[in-house]
Image (tube, rainbow, N blue to C red; front, side, top):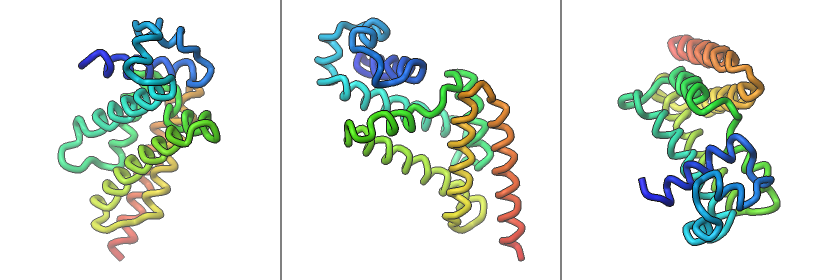
Length: 183
Protein backbone atom coordinates (compact mmCIF):
# COMPACT_ATOMS: atom_id res chain seq x y z
CA UNK A 1 0.00 0.00 0.00
CA UNK A 2 1.06 3.58 -0.47
CA UNK A 3 1.29 6.22 2.25
CA UNK A 4 -2.07 7.80 1.41
CA UNK A 5 -3.85 4.44 1.54
CA UNK A 6 -2.13 3.56 4.82
CA UNK A 7 -3.12 6.90 6.37
CA UNK A 8 -6.76 6.49 5.28
CA UNK A 9 -6.91 2.97 6.75
CA UNK A 10 -5.32 4.12 10.01
CA UNK A 11 -7.71 7.08 10.19
CA UNK A 12 -10.66 4.71 9.68
CA UNK A 13 -9.53 2.64 12.67
CA UNK A 14 -9.11 5.79 14.76
CA UNK A 15 -12.54 7.11 13.77
CA UNK A 16 -14.12 3.74 14.56
CA UNK A 17 -12.62 3.84 18.06
CA UNK A 18 -13.01 7.52 18.91
CA UNK A 19 -15.65 9.01 16.63
CA UNK A 20 -15.34 11.36 13.70
CA UNK A 21 -16.07 15.02 14.33
CA UNK A 22 -14.71 15.36 17.85
CA UNK A 23 -11.11 14.49 16.97
CA UNK A 24 -8.68 17.27 16.15
CA UNK A 25 -6.43 17.15 13.09
CA UNK A 26 -3.30 17.11 15.25
CA UNK A 27 -4.55 14.02 17.09
CA UNK A 28 -5.44 12.35 13.79
CA UNK A 29 -1.99 13.11 12.41
CA UNK A 30 -0.24 11.74 15.47
CA UNK A 31 -2.39 8.61 15.38
CA UNK A 32 -1.72 7.88 11.71
CA UNK A 33 1.95 8.85 11.82
CA UNK A 34 1.74 11.98 9.71
CA UNK A 35 2.01 15.70 10.20
CA UNK A 36 -1.00 17.94 9.74
CA UNK A 37 0.68 19.32 6.63
CA UNK A 38 1.03 15.81 5.18
CA UNK A 39 -2.64 15.08 5.85
CA UNK A 40 -3.72 18.24 4.05
CA UNK A 41 -1.29 17.52 1.20
CA UNK A 42 -2.81 14.09 0.59
CA UNK A 43 -6.47 14.73 1.41
CA UNK A 44 -7.00 18.46 0.88
CA UNK A 45 -9.04 18.87 4.04
CA UNK A 46 -10.11 17.10 7.19
CA UNK A 47 -13.35 16.11 5.47
CA UNK A 48 -11.31 14.78 2.54
CA UNK A 49 -9.54 12.51 5.02
CA UNK A 50 -12.88 11.41 6.47
CA UNK A 51 -14.13 10.51 2.99
CA UNK A 52 -10.94 8.56 2.23
CA UNK A 53 -11.22 6.77 5.58
CA UNK A 54 -14.84 5.82 4.86
CA UNK A 55 -13.89 4.57 1.40
CA UNK A 56 -11.04 2.55 2.94
CA UNK A 57 -13.29 1.03 5.60
CA UNK A 58 -16.03 0.13 3.12
CA UNK A 59 -13.55 -1.42 0.67
CA UNK A 60 -11.89 -3.41 3.46
CA UNK A 61 -15.23 -4.80 4.68
CA UNK A 62 -16.40 -5.69 1.19
CA UNK A 63 -13.06 -7.43 0.53
CA UNK A 64 -13.44 -9.50 3.70
CA UNK A 65 -17.04 -10.24 2.75
CA UNK A 66 -15.97 -11.67 -0.60
CA UNK A 67 -12.76 -13.34 0.59
CA UNK A 68 -14.17 -16.80 1.24
CA UNK A 69 -17.46 -16.66 -0.59
CA UNK A 70 -16.64 -18.11 -3.99
CA UNK A 71 -19.12 -17.01 -6.64
CA UNK A 72 -22.10 -15.91 -4.51
CA UNK A 73 -22.01 -16.08 -0.74
CA UNK A 74 -24.93 -17.07 1.39
CA UNK A 75 -27.08 -14.77 3.46
CA UNK A 76 -25.83 -16.49 6.60
CA UNK A 77 -22.19 -15.85 5.64
CA UNK A 78 -22.91 -12.11 5.87
CA UNK A 79 -23.29 -12.58 9.61
CA UNK A 80 -20.27 -14.89 9.81
CA UNK A 81 -18.22 -12.12 8.20
CA UNK A 82 -19.62 -9.57 10.65
CA UNK A 83 -18.64 -11.82 13.53
CA UNK A 84 -15.10 -12.24 12.13
CA UNK A 85 -14.81 -8.50 11.46
CA UNK A 86 -15.94 -7.69 15.00
CA UNK A 87 -13.40 -10.12 16.46
CA UNK A 88 -10.59 -8.65 14.35
CA UNK A 89 -11.41 -4.93 14.44
CA UNK A 90 -13.69 -4.67 17.45
CA UNK A 91 -17.43 -4.30 17.60
CA UNK A 92 -17.65 -0.52 17.47
CA UNK A 93 -20.81 -0.19 15.41
CA UNK A 94 -21.00 0.92 11.81
CA UNK A 95 -18.58 3.73 11.03
CA UNK A 96 -20.56 4.58 7.92
CA UNK A 97 -23.83 5.07 9.78
CA UNK A 98 -22.07 7.12 12.45
CA UNK A 99 -20.52 9.30 9.75
CA UNK A 100 -23.88 9.75 8.07
CA UNK A 101 -25.39 10.81 11.36
CA UNK A 102 -22.54 13.07 12.50
CA UNK A 103 -22.22 14.83 9.13
CA UNK A 104 -25.91 15.20 8.31
CA UNK A 105 -26.41 18.89 7.72
CA UNK A 106 -22.65 19.55 7.85
CA UNK A 107 -21.26 17.84 4.74
CA UNK A 108 -23.53 16.58 1.99
CA UNK A 109 -20.64 14.85 0.18
CA UNK A 110 -19.91 12.62 3.17
CA UNK A 111 -23.60 11.80 3.65
CA UNK A 112 -23.94 11.02 -0.07
CA UNK A 113 -20.89 8.74 0.09
CA UNK A 114 -22.39 6.86 3.03
CA UNK A 115 -25.68 6.45 1.15
CA UNK A 116 -23.85 5.07 -1.91
CA UNK A 117 -21.85 2.66 0.22
CA UNK A 118 -24.94 1.45 2.05
CA UNK A 119 -26.69 0.96 -1.29
CA UNK A 120 -23.74 -1.16 -2.50
CA UNK A 121 -24.04 -3.30 0.62
CA UNK A 122 -27.83 -3.58 0.27
CA UNK A 123 -27.37 -4.73 -3.33
CA UNK A 124 -24.98 -7.41 -2.05
CA UNK A 125 -27.64 -8.59 0.40
CA UNK A 126 -30.27 -8.56 -2.36
CA UNK A 127 -27.96 -10.50 -4.69
CA UNK A 128 -27.52 -13.22 -2.07
CA UNK A 129 -31.23 -13.41 -1.34
CA UNK A 130 -32.03 -13.61 -5.05
CA UNK A 131 -29.42 -16.31 -5.60
CA UNK A 132 -30.78 -18.41 -2.73
CA UNK A 133 -34.43 -18.07 -3.75
CA UNK A 134 -34.03 -17.99 -7.51
CA UNK A 135 -35.84 -14.65 -7.72
CA UNK A 136 -35.68 -11.15 -6.29
CA UNK A 137 -37.41 -10.45 -3.00
CA UNK A 138 -36.95 -6.78 -2.06
CA UNK A 139 -38.90 -7.08 1.21
CA UNK A 140 -36.86 -10.06 2.41
CA UNK A 141 -33.65 -8.33 1.32
CA UNK A 142 -34.63 -5.31 3.40
CA UNK A 143 -35.41 -7.52 6.40
CA UNK A 144 -32.02 -9.25 6.18
CA UNK A 145 -30.30 -5.88 5.77
CA UNK A 146 -32.10 -4.51 8.85
CA UNK A 147 -31.07 -7.58 10.87
CA UNK A 148 -27.46 -7.07 9.81
CA UNK A 149 -27.39 -3.35 10.59
CA UNK A 150 -29.17 -3.91 13.90
CA UNK A 151 -26.74 -6.65 14.91
CA UNK A 152 -23.85 -4.36 14.02
CA UNK A 153 -25.24 -1.60 16.23
CA UNK A 154 -26.12 -3.80 19.20
CA UNK A 155 -22.81 -5.68 19.04
CA UNK A 156 -21.12 -2.35 19.79
CA UNK A 157 -22.70 -2.51 23.25
CA UNK A 158 -20.45 -5.47 24.13
CA UNK A 159 -23.02 -7.97 23.00
CA UNK A 160 -21.51 -9.76 19.99
CA UNK A 161 -23.75 -12.78 20.71
CA UNK A 162 -26.49 -10.78 19.00
CA UNK A 163 -24.73 -11.41 15.68
CA UNK A 164 -25.41 -15.14 16.02
CA UNK A 165 -29.01 -14.41 16.97
CA UNK A 166 -29.42 -12.19 13.90
CA UNK A 167 -27.84 -14.92 11.76
CA UNK A 168 -30.36 -17.43 13.11
CA UNK A 169 -33.23 -15.01 12.43
CA UNK A 170 -31.97 -14.46 8.87
CA UNK A 171 -31.70 -18.22 8.35
CA UNK A 172 -35.29 -18.62 9.58
CA UNK A 173 -36.53 -15.92 7.23
CA UNK A 174 -34.67 -17.52 4.32
CA UNK A 175 -36.03 -20.99 5.18
CA UNK A 176 -39.58 -19.64 5.42
CA UNK A 177 -39.20 -17.86 2.09
CA UNK A 178 -37.80 -21.04 0.56
CA UNK A 179 -40.75 -23.09 1.83
CA UNK A 180 -43.21 -20.47 0.59
CA UNK A 181 -41.39 -20.57 -2.75
CA UNK A 182 -42.04 -24.32 -3.08
CA UNK A 183 -45.80 -24.11 -2.55
